[in-house]
Image (cartoon, rainbow, N blue to C red; front, side, top):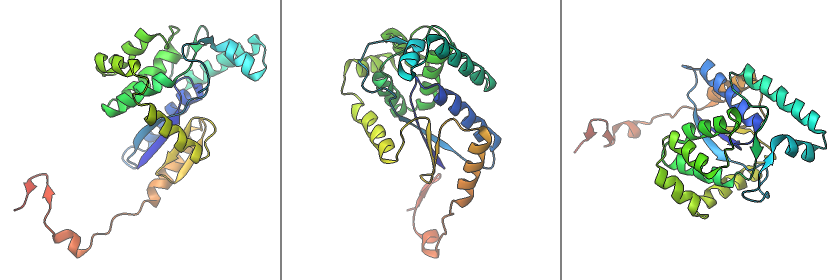
Length: 234
């Protein structure tokens, strides 16, 4: 059963929500089989590339809060993340345009390292204060997730590389009515918005799995020539 998850690397609720979702999947191990596909979503696609802002300053300006209120919100998120077993640096992080990160993440998906790369970039952004937007740190994080350094550099140097893949993900999210992330679509049937409790994720996963219809084999389907693990009958 496929689960599509639209996220942004700088979205704290995506970080927390994915941990809760993963916990639900572990609880259902042996009952439900899940294949996750990560999808791109930019929270601030119009921000100027390379322009960085401290997280607290961004939150204060965006939501009309005082810096103290914004910082208090970061402390609350740190506590919520800790409850899910996640490290979260509540001070000193910055935020910037994430389009290039998403292009690298699509390279990771093409090379079979999608899950590892998303996890690595989440950790680099939320669990450490060094900026994830430094070019060399982007490269090192991607390489640490199993990608080839030369390929990562080539993607970063080519603004067209995986551009359309990112835009296609964002267009699909818009068509589905997603205005924020995390946004989960389970088996192309159930949409879940936000970092919901683990119990809700488990409930919907089990429900969707129970509603899957098995393939009914006909006599013709079981007797025709076919290829299998042992080779092809001739």
